[in-house]
Image: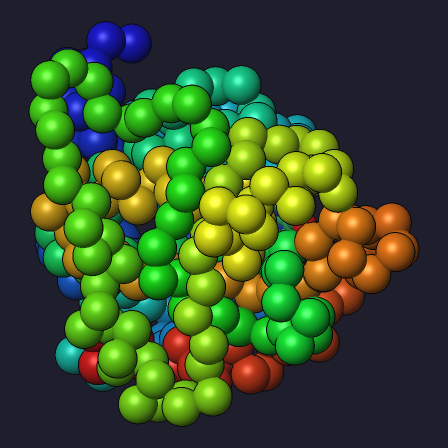
Length: 266
Ligand code: 8IG
């Protein structure tokens, strides 16, 4: 598809969402990354759920029978659009597919997006299951969701206002600089040494491209990472995907409490 067709697809997907959920406008979008799914029920009352396969422009499911789903949730007087899963750059479908959810959310009326992810941490105080606010990012994917000479400013991309609000809810929340690699392999210890040298404290395979697309669309961005493992080469143990999933389950209650308290105030 051309750029024009993708933006049309986002507009059409937003219209289809309004029709299929019965909710004309949504206020806040949330993208639930690995480890965050168990927290979704704490957000509010589910109004409707739609399969992304029924909407224009969304990628076919990476695993057969596991279509992405989008839930419309009522949280007080706020209407939430909750993306249960995302398209990753490592799937090879291109950066537009990665950002289609965020662009659809903008077209659906959202003014704020909460981007969550599971990631590796470089700070040994962040035991598996620790939530960290993203304060800034380094995009090591060598690509951008923006095409053409549109020089979008990324100062304060991760809203200082929304970060302060989160820290009011939970003063123990630390902040980190998220470094996105393409993946799907984890980093080598040498790459993690590089991340440390360039000021990164969190490593993952998502979020930065969506955050850039969100800023281009005029959305306010809140980034929340769940540290599920120490980054490669820090603990001396190999990285284990099972361990990653377990850390997410174990911290679901805390993530749910955090989101449940923060989202109605966004
Ligand atoms: I969960 O250690 C999770 N996702 N790049 N590195 C990268 N992505 C991750 C990691 C990690 N843990």
